[in-house]
Length: 112
Image (cartoon, rainbow, N blue to C red; front, side, top):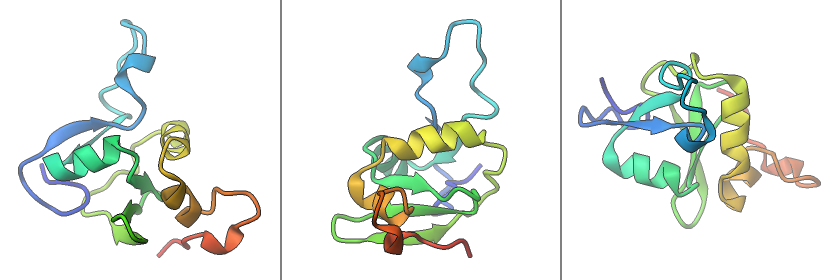
């Protein structure tokens, strides 16, 4: 498997919705985990990466600006509610680029 963002073959499973929010009986492996390289996994967990609602791209905040990056792999299997919840926990700059900040619609990143 390769990183959904950069294509690196060294990957880890990244939870879109935090694993701790599931009960022991719930299985979160198939609709909640994407493969990311260690660097993108850390940035994802730190709220520096959001998922565009159509699940074809990511918004990555590099400390200065947000960039839209096409996904290297199919992530359409992720549940929409998990993606929405994940994006709500992202940094302000990522939420801004996703058009999630009320009154700041001009920040919206359109789908490719």
